[in-house]
Image 1 (cartoon, rainbow, N blue to C red):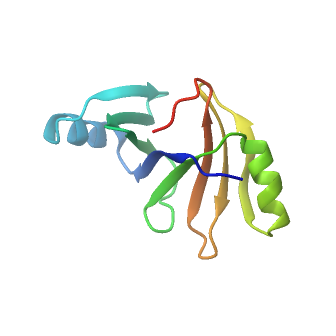
Image 2 (image 1 turned 60 degrees about the vertical axis):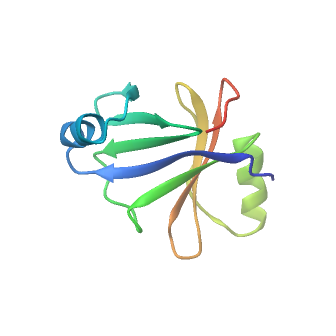
Length: 119
């Protein structure tokens, strides 16, 4: 398995509309994508800042998404290393993804965009 880069950093938020207003109106970031009224993405250079409402705040408060060539193969490899798999590989609208945990339980997303881009 080879990590190709960081696709996004995710913050869980308690109030989605309030968080969008803060990042957009206060920090001046452009809301580049929005899904279902609970997930928003702000493109910041080569990395995306994502916000998500509705999920409990994860340990550490943030989640990193690492870009890989093949999410299923990456998870298969990590299972051989006894890594905790939180969310098995699945397909989203624009990507393939899975969630694993580091030894302290911090979430790490494995991510592959369908358009092949990274960051």
